[in-house]
Every structure is written in structure tokens, then in C-alpha cells.
Length: 238
Image 1: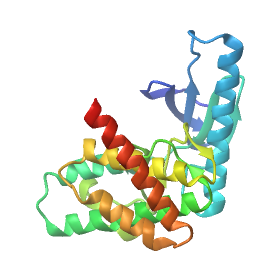
Image 2: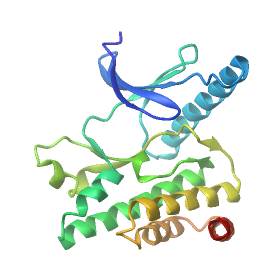
Image 3: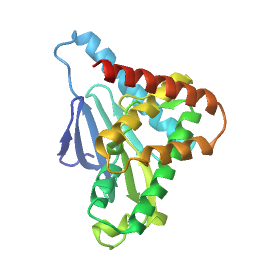
Image 4: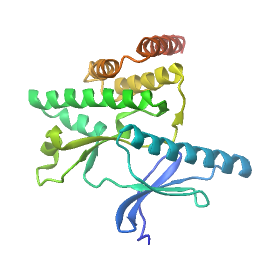
């Protein structure tokens, strides 16, 4: 049923493996045991986080936000089996690759993706899904129909590319405007630290976010600005 596992990467919370499961390319996320926690508490926290992750993925699908398909949640082995996108690149890597290009058309493509990102996050928030870790590493560009184009150029054909959100390990369901503001602030900080060569990237994402739906938008903007002010104060105080 499951072919040999190959380790893809190891993070602070989990190991990621790739394999074939029921004949499909599959990513397995296996959460570590935290030995500094009491075993019962660790099991309880891990189970709750896995439930939240699975719930958010399913809810995103219902909301029309593209995420990996969920295949299996195995609480005993602390594993979630989900779709692995073989023809994909993280938004982070796409932007890093853009640095070597001075082509205005390439920059225009980034603007198109910024617009998509803003709309997708807004759609997610409209359905009260808080991602908890919005970074460009947790966004994939996925080829809808795999092409034979050169690696860098195929991602510029945005008509054949889907934006997929991944890694819902810190996600939860909540209607709080504060949590939506924090989600946006986390993304802004991530863009500043990782992609400071594109200083207006967040403002383009935020503009698309605001324009996608006016529902509750004033409250969300207000909370985001509060969170941002608190964050700046902390940074200044050190």
C-alpha cells in the first residue's frame, strides 16, 4: 500500500517523507514526540494539532482554497498522508529566482501572483480559517498541466499555474478579527525578512485582500494595524 519512504526534509515539529500511497505521489508529515513534555500531554497536544490541520485543509477545500488532498490521518503513528505536488515550486524559491532576472515581464508575473495570494488569504479568512504561519515557503505554485518548458520559464505562464497553500500545522478555526490581523502581520514580517528586495510586495497582496470582499474589512484592517503597532513597539524596545 505504501512504497518505500524517502525523507524530504526535517523541521522543528515534524519530518516530511515522500512515497507512493495507493498509487499516488504522497507526502507524509510525521510529528515528533517531544520528550520534555509529559507523554500524555504530548499525545493530547499532537492529536489536537493534527485534528486542526486536517480540519483546516478540508475546510479550505470547501471554501475553494487550493490545498493538498488529504488521504489519511494516523493518530497512532502521528502521521498525516496528503497529496504531494511533483510539478511545483515554493513562492519563496520563485521570488529568489526572479532576482537574477531584470525582465519587466517577470516582475509583472510576480504582481499577478501577489494578487492571487491576497485573494486566497481573504477567501480563507472569510471562512474563519487562520493559517498561523503565512510565509512564502508555505505557498506553492503548481503546474495544472505539466509542460516541457524550462524550469524557470514555466512558472511565468501564470495561466497554467495554481496557487496552493500548505503546512496548516499551526492553523485553527476562529472568527476573531484579531487572529486575522495577526495572520496578516506574520506574512508582512516574513516578506520583509525574506524578500526585502521587493518592498511593495505586501502592499500589493494587502490591496488584493481588501478588494476581494468588503465584509468586516474595516475591523480586520483596524486589528491588523493594532497588531502591527504592538509589533513595532516590541521591536523598538527590544
